[in-house]
Length: 171
Image (cartoon, rainbow, N blue to C red; front, side, top):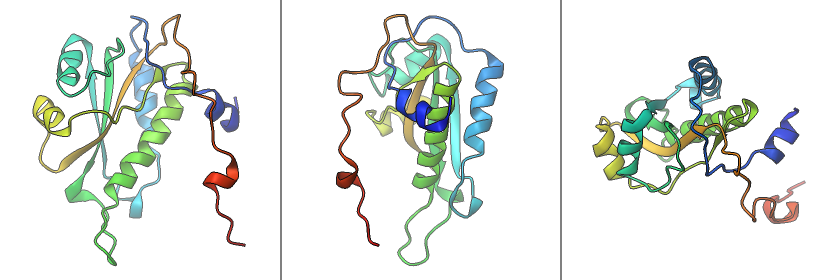
């Protein structure tokens, strides 16, 4: 499948089967996110891997968006190890985490797995439940698994604004 088809066909999966994600598949996903470009190549993204019932308990303290997954990848950035833009002090870490998360999301879909980018979580509760160091800032949670038989895109999945709404040409 080419990138266009992959981007078009992937959807936010909110229902997972009980099938466990194989370790070699997980390692490939983690390797692909590692290849994502980052600001000044600082690679400030930090991915936490949580599996099983304990993972559901931990993630469940910060969000209801579990969807029956037994594997969760929590994308963070290291505030102490990211590029800082000299003009205004903006941190590159959030961008690093979002780019790596986008690579991860596409890699998950290309592997026949499903995920949903979860931004609806309480960062303080997640930080406490995971015992994150102060400098690791959570950006997204990815529940990962094989889609359940009844999993399907939401009704609004294909609703997209026209290009002239999202693209501003300056030429």
